[in-house]
Length: 600
Figure 1: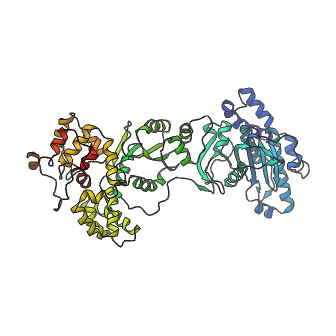
Figure 2: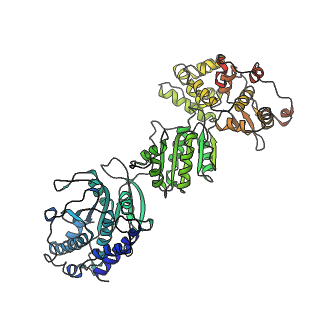
Figure 3: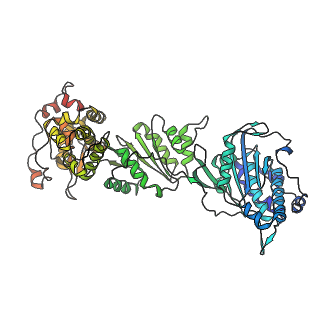
């Protein structure tokens, strides 16, 4: 195949897909015209090997056409390993290779409308009005270089392996050139490419209207000196190689905030999340404020980085989930377009995990849209309540095991300079059921006094010990305010039962309210009630002890926690609820009753 035919074929390969989407190629004749214009003149290429016979070496001084402005596509090219090639060939033979390389590149640029800004050694800096022309030029350059004749060394042609970088961005010429970060981004993209490879930014591919078959998405990368990540794609065409090592720059694979201190590992919760994501794409992680949902979610997500090809991305939803996602992905909003639309386009073909924090049910439509538009996307939704979307797996953050909760409390003490160890904190952690918000409430008195002092204070005045700063009660108020009336009534009933209730007893309670288990489901979803399974065929539903103390005003039991009731015990008449509770369930709760304000 001669050089003219090879170049024409390569440019046709890139131009034909652009015919449907590119701004200039509106029909078959447009495509053929572009490809014909890009075909190289055989005579010029044949004579390119002789120094001085092709176009004169020149840079910006030879330009006469105005420089592109507005949305400009930049191209950088250079020869990989040029110093080693020059040393091996010697000055005269390398001069022949360099002149032939320049002549081939300039013929393609002339045919595709590229404006040569600068040439230094073996590199070119070029600007294009049209991104599709720039992509066609890159394909044409690589094809022409592969088809040309080159000096031999030990029976093999010493063809220069050229790497090419492309990027499209807003730019305006100044003083015969460009002063814009987009030029630096293009140069970094070229540096990230390997010999014979064409790398482009996703912005360039989108501006050119390239179809998915014409490119391969490589992911987001952090380019040196640039503040935001750049998504790179590899351009391909028939006859060009496709297998290259990863770009030699750092990939950007997550947006998980760094931990200020190592989190206490919670392997039980991690296993539950693993099990949920084995069959579901949406999993909600819920619980009372301050229970450690965000810490568990980030720690689990960090362990899953290797399982998601296109990364793990964390953000707090805020008022605009789309804008928060774009910020996490390192992308800018687009003019006249909703941020969620831009984010969905970015994630449409991604195999990625989103960790969305502080979600509420107002975000449910946006999350559902992302899952429908992006089939490779998984979402961990962190919030006070589930989203109640189809296919959602619900996981409420339960009570931490004694060792885990003791380690959490010891960590709080260490932050405050107290010497208490995990062993020192274990009795207090066990006394509060491993309920993390209660541990937080007791952290100050534990650190300033001792775990023993905190435990005595808790025994004497549980509500006062837990609610010294008001944060614990506020968290309970917020959680209870969000649940339904029947759920509040069932919560009060269960709070009066220190050993919890079996499913039979809970069914009786629910029948007294609305005839269904929805009230219980609601309480479990927000972690106001926990499920304990002493055996595979048993389930006990219990209000965590600190919540029970706050709701009923009762003191912690001095005895060890009794085991779950046997079947014979379950058949016995249920004990009465705590004193005064029956009347409160029938009559309105008075707001001035401090102990019951949370369920008013």
